[in-house]
Image (cartoon, rainbow, N blue to C red; front, side, top):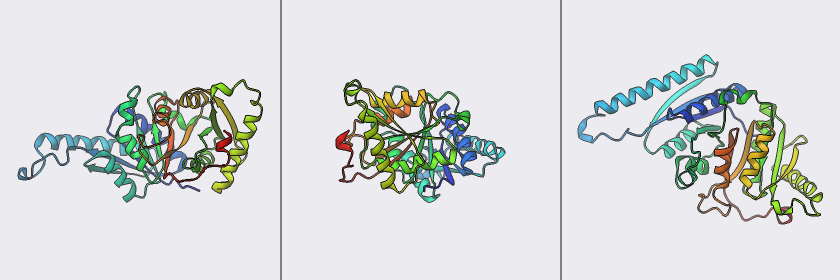
Length: 301
């Protein structure tokens, strides 16, 4: 089972990052994990070699970043969390990924405020790069979360949403692990087209989905204790997943994503990011390499 003992929060001190920090505190308390706070100082290489160091203005920015990072560290320590800070330089996504690797991070946390900028978010953003390349799960705190500090107190379920693709179903292990760690029930969700909602086969579809989800659990080697297997209907998958999470007051949504870029993926590019930016709770993603394999139930659904 996945372990979540070391958590990384990447922050740029924006309101979105502050919301992610508050979520990170709750996550670390619940999981009894330590916290690494990372700020990427993008001006680290701005000074020319002949300058002999950073210009005075950049030095001021650097010290301000250090002061703010230390302030977050003290807040975490007052909450009883073991915490350390890192200031990196260079391209943000590369620095985040390098810090994840060198610090043996089990879970990375990011914040985003992209309410409507799906195109910007999809095409080459820091978030997309980290989500697709991170060797550990990434928890993204979106802009629709009203009370980031209170997420740990939510009694709703962990929702594992799947399309039964072989490259994404393995994320059920992370959903189950976090479900147990947080004491939340596990709901496995699959979205079917709105066009089949009122057909004569409607009664059979939940049974088929339930059997498929049980097979996923068996293949993953995960001992899932009687999850709720649910079917939702919708012409837009992301809306159906978000509506289900909102209706159930979900604590977390878990998605498996493909390591290929959004442009190279055969799944509609906007789905995962629409869920992230519209969900009322954090969204955990785990990236897997694509492989040539078709799940037994996929053709039936």
